[in-house]
Length: 241
Image (tube, rainbow, N blue to C red; front, side, top):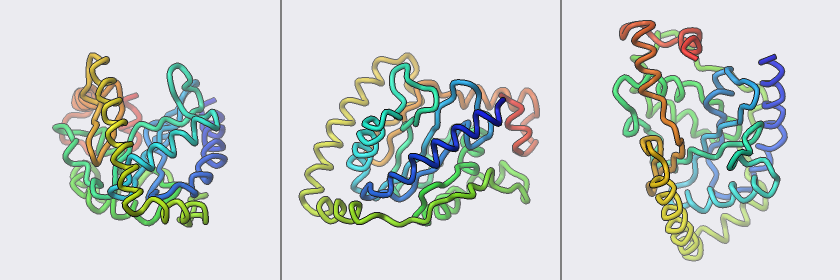
Protein backbone atom coordinates (compact mmCIF):
# COMPACT_ATOMS: atom_id res chain seq x y z
CA UNK A 1 0.00 0.00 0.00
CA UNK A 2 2.72 2.42 0.95
CA UNK A 3 4.61 1.73 -2.27
CA UNK A 4 1.53 2.66 -4.29
CA UNK A 5 1.15 5.91 -2.33
CA UNK A 6 4.82 6.75 -2.90
CA UNK A 7 4.45 6.03 -6.60
CA UNK A 8 1.54 8.45 -6.91
CA UNK A 9 3.38 11.17 -5.01
CA UNK A 10 6.50 10.79 -7.16
CA UNK A 11 4.30 10.98 -10.25
CA UNK A 12 3.09 14.36 -9.01
CA UNK A 13 6.71 15.42 -8.48
CA UNK A 14 7.45 14.40 -12.09
CA UNK A 15 4.44 16.30 -13.34
CA UNK A 16 4.77 19.59 -11.48
CA UNK A 17 8.35 20.25 -10.38
CA UNK A 18 9.75 20.61 -13.95
CA UNK A 19 7.31 23.47 -14.45
CA UNK A 20 9.28 25.54 -11.94
CA UNK A 21 12.20 25.99 -14.31
CA UNK A 22 10.73 29.31 -15.43
CA UNK A 23 11.01 30.73 -11.87
CA UNK A 24 13.82 33.31 -11.65
CA UNK A 25 16.53 33.13 -8.97
CA UNK A 26 15.79 29.44 -8.25
CA UNK A 27 18.86 27.43 -7.18
CA UNK A 28 17.43 24.20 -5.79
CA UNK A 29 14.16 22.35 -5.36
CA UNK A 30 14.47 19.19 -3.29
CA UNK A 31 11.97 16.72 -1.89
CA UNK A 32 12.38 16.28 1.85
CA UNK A 33 10.74 14.82 4.96
CA UNK A 34 8.51 11.74 4.67
CA UNK A 35 8.58 11.22 0.91
CA UNK A 36 12.37 11.51 0.88
CA UNK A 37 12.54 9.14 3.85
CA UNK A 38 10.29 6.57 2.18
CA UNK A 39 7.78 6.73 5.02
CA UNK A 40 4.63 8.21 3.50
CA UNK A 41 1.12 7.10 4.37
CA UNK A 42 -2.40 7.76 3.22
CA UNK A 43 -3.02 11.52 3.24
CA UNK A 44 0.67 12.52 3.05
CA UNK A 45 1.75 15.69 1.31
CA UNK A 46 4.96 16.45 -0.58
CA UNK A 47 7.43 18.57 1.38
CA UNK A 48 9.85 20.74 -0.59
CA UNK A 49 13.09 22.45 0.41
CA UNK A 50 13.82 25.41 -1.85
CA UNK A 51 16.96 27.54 -2.21
CA UNK A 52 16.94 30.99 -3.81
CA UNK A 53 19.59 33.43 -4.91
CA UNK A 54 20.57 35.75 -2.06
CA UNK A 55 18.58 38.95 -2.24
CA UNK A 56 15.63 37.39 -4.05
CA UNK A 57 14.26 34.88 -1.54
CA UNK A 58 10.90 36.57 -1.08
CA UNK A 59 10.40 37.24 -4.78
CA UNK A 60 11.06 33.61 -5.63
CA UNK A 61 8.85 32.31 -2.82
CA UNK A 62 5.99 34.57 -3.91
CA UNK A 63 6.18 33.36 -7.51
CA UNK A 64 6.34 29.67 -6.57
CA UNK A 65 3.48 30.00 -4.08
CA UNK A 66 1.22 31.80 -6.56
CA UNK A 67 2.11 29.34 -9.32
CA UNK A 68 1.33 26.22 -7.27
CA UNK A 69 -1.81 27.81 -5.86
CA UNK A 70 -3.00 28.64 -9.38
CA UNK A 71 -2.44 25.01 -10.40
CA UNK A 72 -4.41 23.85 -7.36
CA UNK A 73 -1.60 21.75 -5.88
CA UNK A 74 -0.37 23.91 -2.98
CA UNK A 75 -1.02 22.66 0.54
CA UNK A 76 -3.10 25.08 2.58
CA UNK A 77 -5.82 24.94 5.22
CA UNK A 78 -7.17 21.38 5.19
CA UNK A 79 -6.06 20.74 1.61
CA UNK A 80 -3.17 18.37 2.32
CA UNK A 81 -3.35 15.02 0.54
CA UNK A 82 -0.89 14.83 -2.37
CA UNK A 83 -0.26 18.58 -2.36
CA UNK A 84 3.05 20.43 -2.22
CA UNK A 85 4.01 21.83 1.17
CA UNK A 86 6.02 25.02 0.67
CA UNK A 87 7.31 25.36 4.19
CA UNK A 88 11.11 25.64 4.02
CA UNK A 89 13.00 28.27 2.03
CA UNK A 90 16.54 29.61 2.38
CA UNK A 91 18.79 31.69 0.18
CA UNK A 92 22.25 30.53 -0.89
CA UNK A 93 23.92 32.48 1.92
CA UNK A 94 22.15 30.30 4.51
CA UNK A 95 23.04 26.79 3.38
CA UNK A 96 24.68 25.87 6.68
CA UNK A 97 21.80 24.86 8.94
CA UNK A 98 23.86 24.35 12.09
CA UNK A 99 22.43 27.61 13.44
CA UNK A 100 18.97 26.08 13.66
CA UNK A 101 20.11 22.70 15.03
CA UNK A 102 19.04 21.60 18.46
CA UNK A 103 21.21 19.60 20.86
CA UNK A 104 21.77 16.07 19.46
CA UNK A 105 19.54 16.90 16.51
CA UNK A 106 19.22 13.44 14.96
CA UNK A 107 16.24 14.46 12.88
CA UNK A 108 17.88 17.47 11.24
CA UNK A 109 21.05 15.49 10.55
CA UNK A 110 19.09 12.73 8.83
CA UNK A 111 16.95 15.30 7.02
CA UNK A 112 20.01 17.09 5.59
CA UNK A 113 21.65 13.90 4.39
CA UNK A 114 18.47 12.63 2.75
CA UNK A 115 17.04 15.54 0.79
CA UNK A 116 16.44 14.52 -2.83
CA UNK A 117 17.36 17.26 -5.32
CA UNK A 118 14.99 17.54 -8.29
CA UNK A 119 16.00 20.85 -9.86
CA UNK A 120 19.60 21.52 -8.94
CA UNK A 121 22.06 24.19 -10.07
CA UNK A 122 24.80 22.16 -8.38
CA UNK A 123 24.17 23.77 -5.04
CA UNK A 124 23.12 20.50 -3.39
CA UNK A 125 26.79 19.45 -3.30
CA UNK A 126 27.72 22.71 -1.59
CA UNK A 127 24.80 22.20 0.79
CA UNK A 128 26.18 18.85 1.93
CA UNK A 129 29.73 20.20 2.18
CA UNK A 130 28.87 23.14 4.41
CA UNK A 131 26.76 20.86 6.60
CA UNK A 132 29.60 18.42 7.26
CA UNK A 133 28.90 18.97 10.98
CA UNK A 134 26.37 16.12 10.62
CA UNK A 135 29.11 13.53 9.86
CA UNK A 136 29.52 12.35 13.48
CA UNK A 137 25.86 11.25 13.44
CA UNK A 138 26.54 8.60 10.76
CA UNK A 139 28.75 5.63 10.07
CA UNK A 140 31.57 6.54 7.66
CA UNK A 141 30.13 4.44 4.86
CA UNK A 142 26.50 5.53 5.31
CA UNK A 143 25.29 6.69 1.91
CA UNK A 144 22.75 9.37 1.14
CA UNK A 145 19.11 8.37 0.89
CA UNK A 146 17.18 7.74 -2.28
CA UNK A 147 18.79 8.72 -5.56
CA UNK A 148 16.21 10.26 -7.84
CA UNK A 149 16.61 8.80 -11.32
CA UNK A 150 14.80 11.67 -13.04
CA UNK A 151 16.80 14.54 -11.59
CA UNK A 152 16.35 17.57 -13.84
CA UNK A 153 19.51 19.22 -15.18
CA UNK A 154 19.45 22.86 -14.19
CA UNK A 155 18.39 24.86 -17.24
CA UNK A 156 16.37 27.98 -16.63
CA UNK A 157 13.89 28.63 -19.43
CA UNK A 158 13.78 31.73 -21.63
CA UNK A 159 10.91 33.00 -19.50
CA UNK A 160 13.03 32.58 -16.37
CA UNK A 161 15.94 34.45 -17.96
CA UNK A 162 13.56 37.22 -18.98
CA UNK A 163 12.22 37.61 -15.45
CA UNK A 164 15.72 37.51 -13.97
CA UNK A 165 16.73 40.29 -16.34
CA UNK A 166 13.69 42.36 -15.36
CA UNK A 167 14.00 41.77 -11.62
CA UNK A 168 17.76 41.73 -11.09
CA UNK A 169 18.31 45.46 -10.73
CA UNK A 170 16.77 48.31 -8.77
CA UNK A 171 13.26 47.35 -9.86
CA UNK A 172 13.88 43.87 -8.49
CA UNK A 173 15.28 45.34 -5.27
CA UNK A 174 12.09 47.36 -4.85
CA UNK A 175 9.81 44.36 -5.38
CA UNK A 176 11.96 42.23 -3.06
CA UNK A 177 11.70 44.89 -0.36
CA UNK A 178 7.90 45.10 -0.66
CA UNK A 179 7.47 41.32 -0.75
CA UNK A 180 9.88 40.80 2.16
CA UNK A 181 8.11 43.35 4.32
CA UNK A 182 4.69 41.91 3.50
CA UNK A 183 5.62 38.24 3.90
CA UNK A 184 7.53 38.73 7.16
CA UNK A 185 4.69 40.77 8.65
CA UNK A 186 2.14 38.15 7.60
CA UNK A 187 4.26 35.26 8.82
CA UNK A 188 4.96 36.82 12.20
CA UNK A 189 1.24 37.25 12.78
CA UNK A 190 0.87 33.52 12.21
CA UNK A 191 3.55 32.76 14.79
CA UNK A 192 1.48 34.57 17.39
CA UNK A 193 -1.48 32.31 16.63
CA UNK A 194 0.27 29.03 17.47
CA UNK A 195 1.08 27.67 20.92
CA UNK A 196 4.56 26.45 20.01
CA UNK A 197 6.43 28.69 17.57
CA UNK A 198 9.78 26.88 17.85
CA UNK A 199 9.36 25.43 14.38
CA UNK A 200 8.67 28.80 12.79
CA UNK A 201 11.57 30.91 11.56
CA UNK A 202 10.89 34.15 9.74
CA UNK A 203 14.12 35.94 8.89
CA UNK A 204 15.74 37.70 5.96
CA UNK A 205 17.58 34.59 4.76
CA UNK A 206 15.37 31.75 5.98
CA UNK A 207 11.67 30.99 6.07
CA UNK A 208 10.67 27.83 7.92
CA UNK A 209 7.02 27.13 8.63
CA UNK A 210 6.58 23.96 10.67
CA UNK A 211 3.76 24.43 13.13
CA UNK A 212 4.85 21.37 15.07
CA UNK A 213 8.57 20.89 15.66
CA UNK A 214 9.05 17.30 16.79
CA UNK A 215 12.84 17.21 16.77
CA UNK A 216 13.18 17.02 20.54
CA UNK A 217 10.59 14.25 20.57
CA UNK A 218 12.64 12.30 18.01
CA UNK A 219 15.81 12.87 20.01
CA UNK A 220 14.24 11.49 23.17
CA UNK A 221 12.78 8.54 21.24
CA UNK A 222 16.18 7.83 19.68
CA UNK A 223 18.06 7.91 22.99
CA UNK A 224 15.42 5.77 24.66
CA UNK A 225 15.56 3.15 21.92
CA UNK A 226 19.20 3.21 20.83
CA UNK A 227 21.15 5.26 23.34
CA UNK A 228 23.31 8.25 22.44
CA UNK A 229 26.26 6.36 20.95
CA UNK A 230 24.60 4.42 18.13
CA UNK A 231 24.93 5.97 14.67
CA UNK A 232 22.11 6.94 12.32
CA UNK A 233 21.00 4.53 9.61
CA UNK A 234 17.84 4.51 7.56
CA UNK A 235 16.42 1.41 9.27
CA UNK A 236 17.07 2.81 12.74
CA UNK A 237 15.66 6.22 11.88
CA UNK A 238 12.52 4.91 10.18
CA UNK A 239 12.08 2.58 13.14
CA UNK A 240 11.23 5.62 15.25
CA UNK A 241 8.08 6.41 13.26
